[in-house]
Length: 511
Image (cartoon, rainbow, N blue to C red; front, side, top):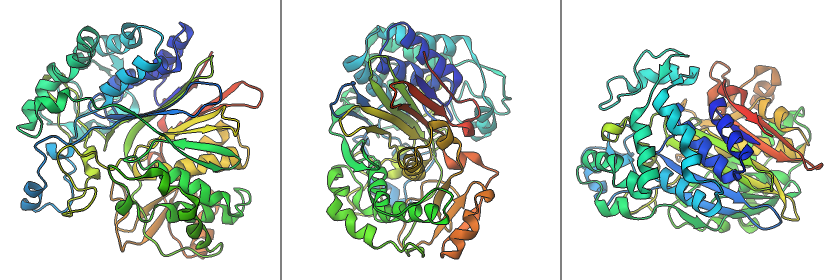
């Protein structure tokens, strides 16, 4: 089974499984298609994180293909220009060396069964021959009107209109012909170096980005939860689930259910800006001795007085499980929509702005600087049964709110026994600071917390307000609440999966 945000990508992934490919082949092939059809969310100019469970009873492997700042990174330049935060658009400072392609190659090298040429073939064909623009892509094209070297995505694009991406096709063909160097030292790399004007060196682009790292684990809801380590914020999913599992949540119809999950997510994450940085010890961040006092601080009847994050982001998550039980949980992102609104030379490939996670406070452990990896919102998850066998792969887009969305899915599927379809389509809440509607404002000290509610019919608006939460119903913007995907191995050994209806064209399909 494969579940993605785009039926084209899902179809390619399923076809690769049908031809004997592994879940890793399906994940790479599907992600490559998304890199073509969904440049408003992801692409080879972004980063990748993944969890891979080989089947059997062992722990998953974790892949960190998040990029690092170039050798010319200079925080003093930004501070001298008056920046107190990293620039969101138009500045290469917010463009770490993109790790996605390095991640695809590392994943395929370790777990692929089919030749890479076969895995990428449909992505190349779709880029060359064209595809019908999705409603989501069409509605975002105004953001890139006038962006230099944007040769593929025209302003005023209509849903269903044909789009061709020849530069992306050339980049993929170069990978097939010359491997990693075909991308990082080819047309894309040359474009990045020229755009950077000293931000990057050839050594930066030659240095391996992808690395296999130890995953984080925590037990909750009768299962073992896994995620990728810092610089990912994935630890918040595990921490929130561990805290929530010790509370009397009741059923989702109980008016305390949402309140207690909100409190669990908030107490897990209120100090994220201080503790999440390159080199942080993720397993310590989910240690029960650290989380226990936070659980004890939760009042079942009243909202706590701690700060909250912003809600939005643009990312794409996909899950794949093959017939041998291998499961892949993979996430790829430009960070904020089309990213930094910068294009790598003549390729037409948009560059991410993941550097927005850096800090500009001198001496901060996440301060922007050469070779450093920024704090990351991307947080794929994987669940095993207590015996180590695969239970779920799951993830979502949503910027800072990703762990909050995943916490709700885990509480529904593992805690309440809901099916993937019921859990995915159920109403959600997300958290945001009082003075931001969207973005990556993270957890700023001194800000109040607001709960955004997707569906007024839940009654959460009234019940949460009565408990002291600041609330707002926002049902006109479904993307605020993520595009989540979940594949579950049922007790009977079959697969059940769901793609988020909020994405409009997402599909879960299998053999």
